[in-house]
Image (cartoon, rainbow, N blue to C red; front, side):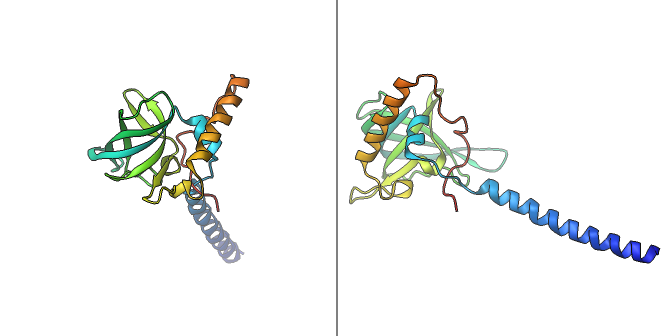
Length: 181
C-alpha cells in the first residue's frame, strides 16, 4: 500500500509541477504581451503631441535592472497638442527595455508625450512613437493612419473632456501596451 501511495504521490507531484511550470511561464508571457491602445486613449494620456526631428540620442546611465537610460533631444516641427512652439527643443527620457520608445537621430517622428518634471516621456512606449518616413506616411503603431486622423482624435477627445471634466484617462499609462493577439 505504501508503494502504491508513493507512486501516486510522485505522479500527482509530477503533474502538479508540470502544471505550475507552464502556468508560471504562461503568466510571464501574458505580462509581456502588449495590449492594444486606441488613438483616443493615446490622446487622452498625452500632455503634448508633436511631430519632431530627433536631434540627439545619448545613453546617460544604467538602471539596476541593466536597462540603459537614454536622453533624447528633439525639435518640434508641428505642435498638435500641448502648447509647445515650432522650433522648440524638448528633452525626452527613454529606456532600453522591451516595448519602450526607440528614437533614432535624424528621424522625423510623431510623439505622444507626458510631461515629467523638466523632461518628457513617451506615452505607452512604442505605441506612442510613430515614425514618419520620407513619403510622409506614418509607420509603427501609426501605420494606416494620417496626421489628419490624429488631429480629429485630438478635437474629439478635447470636446469629450470639456463635456466631462471629471473623466480621467486610464490610470495604467505606464503599462506596456502594444498589440493583442
